[in-house]
Length: 142
Image (cartoon, rainbow, N blue to C red; front, side, top):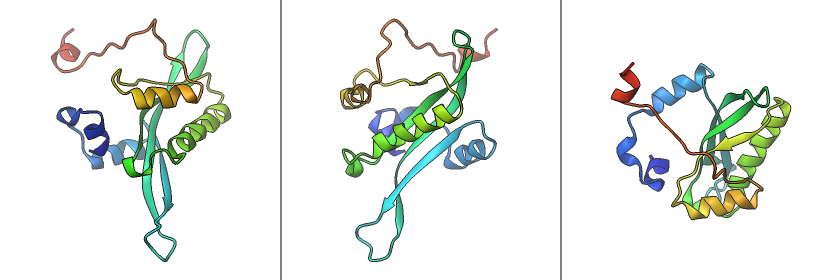
């Protein structure tokens, strides 16, 4: 819900945590969970601070699979500490190991902090493309 709140899309959430777990268990999507030591604890307790949720797609132009990053999220109090970069770098490693031609994702146009972050990593905006979606009744119509 933190992600939906950040993206101002809470009204669009219809799924549950258990549904996400089920999809992760069946490999329709994959997740990278980023944890760090809890500095408020004297023992080495790991706490989750961010995640990346992704799945594989395919490019007919490249004749190569790719990674689509559905969500990248770091808790606000852990941002600007290199955690987001660590998640992206881990996706880069996976993409190279899996012989993927690219990693791509969407970003809300108003999200300037994220756009600046992605560009600092060498990502480029594809201004010649726009996103389309069939959902709800439009998905059911044939």
